[in-house]
Image 1 (tube, rainbow, N blue to C red):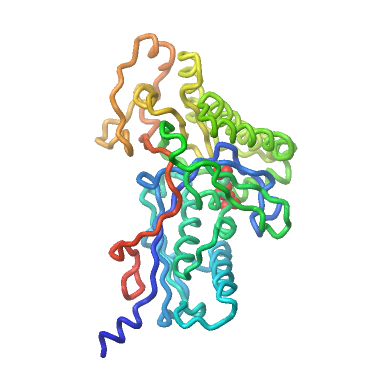
Image 2 (cartoon, protein in one colour):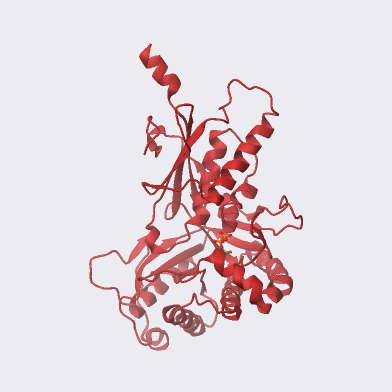
Length: 399
Ligand code: DP6
């Protein structure tokens, strides 16, 4: 009897994983800060979860006395307005789905929930974790409540860029027109299998916390930057169409050129913000110059950089360029001999650099400036974790 009761009382649980994404047409600026509605559409590449992912378990039980949240093993504030917005929206959809009728099999919406979330990469590395985090939260909650609809609109309420992590491959977040945000959604442009040769190198730079968070930074930009207004109204609509074409045609030259220009324009709007915001550092500029010298040496676009609201560089390249460019980075930023693995993620072959390449590209090495390189590629959207041993919460509902 005791065992039967315990089984009956075990919390309902669901675990999902979700990916990080990197924008090639950047989102910067909201027209509605509460609903998180952007001033322009954006487009991103979802990165593979073998290298970067968030895992989240959501549990509900009539025995829980309050909602609770743990991030990377430490209890965090479940009352955070964005967490609450996601919870509220998922519960609203679940209620709507049940049409108010009593479904005995369905999980009670009045039960309190416990959520545990962790990343498979160091948060300190400054890799965008809020997109993967909110996409994962919404995916796990949706599973818990048995929702099957598309939920990018809910993930958007956690963090704008999170809506794009609800899909794999190449993803557009369309700005939408409606004031209530019901048309501000993510759409898959192409699946991760569309461009098998595409690779991504994350150059994780040493130290440094970002000066201004993106939420606060973009609001100041909306209030003060005329360049941002021009970008949102004129530049992005044209670029979005171009970028979709480059992706469809797997045109790396076009894709890479436009990704670099869009990253640069985003950082130009930051400089045009008043007071100005600086996300690029001397090291970022060093990496930018290196990429341009490398491409100039080869006479075409072999690598393309993009930077978000932080100092890490993300480099796109085709698979046959990776080994050589990684060697160029190693020569340009000789790793500290501390035994740490310099190249992580997908395997990278070895490459011998020609003296001409070294002379043209590797100028003034900066030892230790790049901590490590993470080699990854486009990957799928959120995944359900079937194996119950992978849950981040125990049968007692605690981590
Ligand atoms: C520079 O999605 O983090 O990475 O919506 O306020 O949570 P909030 O902002 P967030 O901003 C991301 C900005 C960016 C560009 C991008 O990912 O498109």
